[in-house]
Length: 250
Image (cartoon, rainbow, N blue to C red; front, side):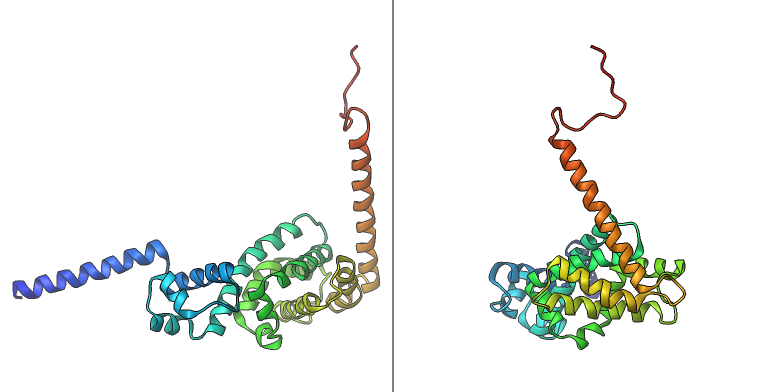
């Protein structure tokens, strides 16, 4: 092999290694583009975002941006999916404060109906309805958020098992879209939707009746409300909250 050819191969290898290093540091080109689009939308709004600006921010050509993302519409979907990761984590944290399966699912629905419509990218995704409900990427995000809770309900006999988990997840996604788009999406209205329309669909036939499940949620709400009121009252008493087991040694 000639010295010139060896030098050429060495240079090519250096370029490959440099590209791999950049990829390791900054993620894939597609990842960089999605993050750049996220930042552009946050700064200028969804209607003003341009592929040229996103490509420039990501350090790639316009042609590369279109090749990686396909279109502006798909770019918005990708940003919505990126932002949904944050909501998945938040929904899990909300559900962690509840004990029963239906209380957890209700809390997730209340959260998503309140928060998702505030994000223009996610609102655009929701507007696609049946198309986005069946999108496997949306399904994976929903499965990550509530899949373990639905499976827990199926194992315990509370949630029906004649339909598989994936079908129930898609149903919950669809219902979350309806709740998010309903002009009457106050917390009370969302809870009413869940208890009167969603619980009857999810409840296992051999488990407690849907009416009993909804009634149980009502009782839990009442108990939590009473506990909060008692805590507030205790905090307002002279000396602050009573210390359990304290004695007067004066």
